[in-house]
Image (cartoon, rainbow, N blue to C red; front, side, top):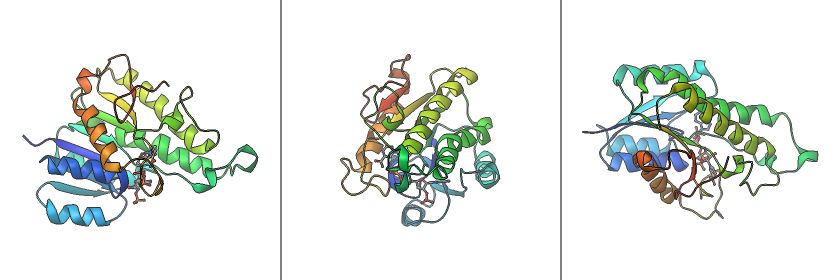
Length: 231
Ligand SMILES: NC(=O)c1ccc[n+]([C@@H]2O[C@H](COP(=O)([O-])OP(=O)(O)OC[C@H]3O[C@@H](n4cnc5c(N)ncnc54)[C@H](OP(=O)(O)O)[C@@H]3O)[C@@H](O)[C@H]2O)c1
């Protein structure tokens, strides 16, 4: 039976790769996007029976709730939810002395609070069998980060990691949530020099989601290839 998949940030980059791969597997895929994109148009053309497009912005509940209501009207249960949407700002590539404190709240609002809004608004269609994948970054690992700058982005991802742990402890739904770093990808965010094609990361992340029950139950934070990252 076709599974119900939800992907935020599915207009391009990693989110589009994850959505396309699930469509190719025959799943029903709900895209949460701010606007039309080449990928959205292509998906609607190639998979008209399988793709559902919901316009929403994770930056505020008022901009997101309609998209989530549409999903709740259509389905009773989400099989896999991927929180992929996030932002980076080039102005964050600097040390503390040049840090623009005005960009940090926007990055935090979208990267740390945005996925929580999605989880809150979709709570009635999430249960112990739903697998949740919060896409974070190794930049948000206190122990394993290589970053020396990117304060706003790295701190926003550390906050998302913490939020994921709180969610896991609060909801008592068993092992149904992981946090993943997709690696450095050739997307608008990662740039052309990056190591990985987003399809390669997407393949690894989908494998982790589908194989969640076999992952170390005491570990939540993984790289796309399954290696462990410390908080
Ligand atoms: N690229 C990398 O090297 C890298 C490394 C580590 C972690 N990551 C993480 O991997 C994930 C995917 O990154 P990516 O490289 O694919 O990024 P990307 O190419 O910049 O795409 C970002 C996606 O997020 C969506 N988005 C941004 N703000 C949103 C909002 N307020 N509401 C709804 N959607 C929003 C964008 O939609 P629009 O098209 O409407 O802007 C777009 O679909 C992110 O969580 C990122 O932090 C990326």
